[in-house]
Length: 195
Image (tube, rainbow, N blue to C red; front, side):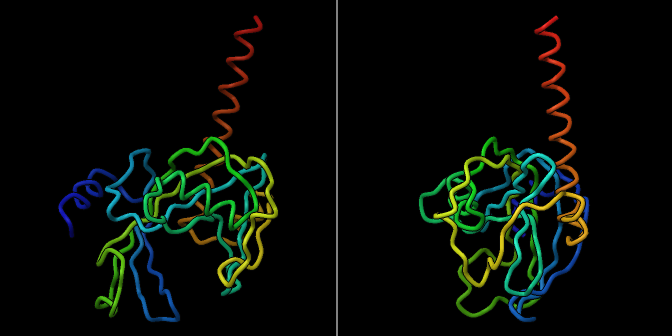
């Protein structure tokens, strides 16, 4: 493993570990999920994603495998910052702009098979950066449906949690807890100001 990446990961403790198989069984991966407010080494970031909240609802994406997830986002284009990528990808996948994005965590992926021919991404390790954000303006004309996004809509958080794997479920629970804490802090500040 790259020294810089190893140093970053060793400074954090994963809250969940799992395996996944992508591309019809051709790409087995080990996944480690981390909560952090520190950006990882950017050379290993292949995708930027966000949990998009609206009150007590979360954006849910149904994809081509008829599976569901709550982390819309995607790959960086040349010259884009992480937040530029995130804003563009979230709008394209959901039709919603985002507001107040905050870093929530990362997912570290490690390949469990030999490097595929012509593979253009970091190998054997790569990262997805996960943010949490509030839903902003609805921009339905900007939404792009394709084989990766068949449906995108807000669901009650409780219902969405039933669809998710453990890693995403815990990211979502943490995002909701942070939102509730911020709302409580905001009300406390307002009460102090008014008294």
